[in-house]
Length: 282
Image (cartoon, rainbow, N blue to C red; front, side):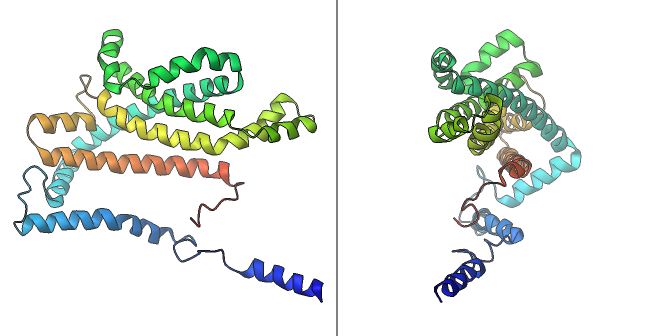
């Protein structure tokens, strides 16, 4: 009887839905996408109604209708495509360079104590330097063409990736390494089968953070004599007093940044399928 009760309990456990599961949690991505739009749409509609009712002037903060009209006009003229392509190319180039260096140097300082004591203090000090402080130096060294812009973005991407990878390696549970040694794994096998899975989640989070900072740093980069890019649209709107153009550029930045982060999550999701976490519950 006891074994029968245990079997029934196991069956109930298998058949019972996960705690907190609902229509959104069960994977209705369309519903989640609509839910994510509720807050921005409510704010946009509220501001539009406030301006139309005369409760606000809408001169310095134009209503969404004017911002969308400006965005549509830029898209119809082909100007928006040129600026978006220029910004995306700079961010992609800087992200590739900064992330690669961050992963390599983070792995070196995370695994080698000598390299950590030698390099990490300097990197931590440089991490505190504001992005705009690099602009005059890079202009002096590299001119005003594309190279200093890409390097500045790479600097912004490098530090969060470096800190994330180095910290992830340093926080690997000692017991996992000892188990690998008990099973007499070689160093390459230990790195592949224990260290890499242990640091992969934190590394992907660091890459997402670095990508977000890449979009932040591209604005500072496009202050360096750029004639194309969304950062240029921001500066042009500020100089000629066109707040609707500034907000249109900010909206384009938000859409591009979210789209790039989504692409990164989708590309890296297969690497984390082995995880058994509460991602879809909490």
